[in-house]
Length: 255
Image (cartoon, rainbow, N blue to C red; front, side):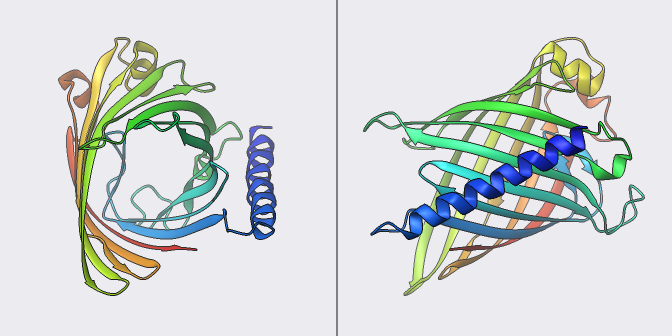
C-alpha cells in the first residue's frame, strides 16, 4: 500500500513539473528551471550514520517554477557491501516551496520528503518527513531546518548550519570556486530512540564539507572532501564508527 502511495507522490511531482514547465513556456520570460546531477561518493553517510561504507552513485533530477521544486534522488550501491550491488537501495521524492519574507534577508522553505528503500524487501520499507526552515542572506549564510517524521519515527531532527562560497572567473562562462559548509544537529528523544535505541534528546552529528566547483557554462564538476562525526558519545557507540570521512565527485547540469 505504501509503495502505491509512493508511486502516486512521484506521479504528482512529475505532473507538477510538467504543468509548471508548460506554464513557463507561455510566459514572456522563462520561469522554469531544471537540474540533473550524478554524484560518486566513496561512502554514503546520512546524518552521521554510515549507511554504506563503500562506494555509491547518487543520481538526481529536479524542476523548479514559481517557488516550487519537485525532485527525485536515488542511491545506487556500487559494491556488494550490503548485498545490493548495482541496485537502487534508496529513492527519495521531495516537494519544496521556498521564498523570502518581503525584501528582507530572511528566506524560508517548507516541504515533504518521501523515502523508500526498495532493497529491504518489505512493502512498508518507507517513511515520510515534513520540514520547515529559515535561512539568512548575511555573511556565512546561516540556516536552521526542522524535520519531523510523520510515519516510521515519532521524533524530530533539527539542523543548524553555515556556508560560504567563493568564485573566480578564469574565462568567459568558465570559473572555479570554493564551497565551505558546516552543520550540527539535535535529535529529539523519539528520533534518537527510533534510530539508535536511546530514548533521550541529544546532539547528533557535526558535518563539514569543502568542495572545489569547476563551472563550465551550464555544467559543473565538483570534487569534495567531507567528514561527519556524532557529537554524542552514547550515540556514537551504537555505530560502527563515530566519525566518517569520504570523497565525492559531482557532475551537474542546469537548464
